[in-house]
Image 1 (tube, rainbow, N blue to C red):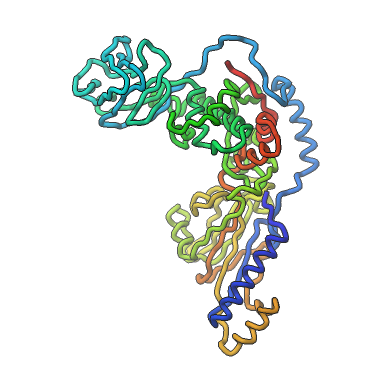
Image 2: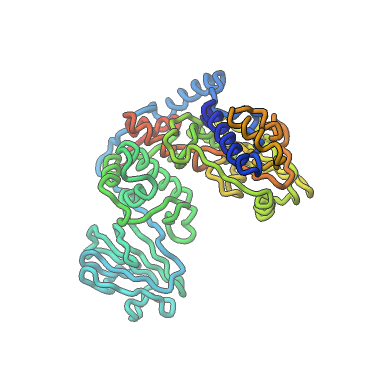
Length: 487
């Protein structure tokens, strides 16, 4: 997953040499670097050669699973039935509100949510202020006898409603809990995906990548709805990244709407169950197995390689002082006092003996300090330190004072590219703990952005740019799934 080639190492070394030469000229210091690679001593991890024997075994299991899964390993399974009703969703736009401003692009009406009685009939763009009065809904200050109202196009026609100035397809449902308002957008699954897709993937990307993301978004929505996480509070999905970023009509573009229409009703299944269609921005070169992120095995979320080289997140660096590391660990309830060493280590339950997953992500990072030792997972490290992914190496940087009398001599040596000038720099760690004395800068050098599960968006873009169709992209990232039309 990490394409840390020799050229990159040479480039990094050359950069260190150049910086040292500059500092020598100032008569100040030379840069010393210590690096800790996950389970690889002083050798940087790379995109792995997958376990051949395990691969053979999984291939046989995969073929059997595909047969049980309906026999459709590739392509899209068409629906035999006709006129199947479209799936409808309720998406939370706001809750705990004192008021809400609503209107319609065309003529609209406010209808009692229980009896269906029309409470207000309005022309296009007329603005109504909805509040709560004595537990009931009030419209422009006029109290009704309804606790639930629906704002919809006249006669129930397809329409576009506005809530606080933003446009949404379908209708709006406003509910009073006795004190505050909840505002829901009720709309079809297809209209929902139109409001999601441009918020999750750039509309300027290749159409096949957009189609793949549309199917993933549609599948992800149905999976989340089926789990019922929000049912207790009265809706199917929220509009944030917790479910998916939903921005309504404001985000829609012709390109993304076309991708949604071209994949209408298409959802991914594994063994007749809607899958958890996880996706992320950038893999760093390979996606991850579900159990190495969640601790739960999912047969359709298997690690695969992809082309991540053009992602702006393919390489990244995050730097911290030792004090910052100590404080952030403490804030997360993982304090170790004064930091003494860092090592990458396996987590006992993971089965790893190297401290990293097959794709190159860190399994465990051990911090040892004056008051104890803690070992956190790579994903925990990602959260605690705000890293872009769990695929990272750890190194230190420090400055070493040079005797003034040696400046000219060492500057001359540095200009000739002599490595001897760096003899005072600590060597790369060979699988042991990296000692910390408190003056270093701790550096995470990483690859990719996100949890690494399922579809990697920049990888999907690379596949589409090279001519892959959206269903091939999906079958690459989601193992042995069936893409099935549901209406």
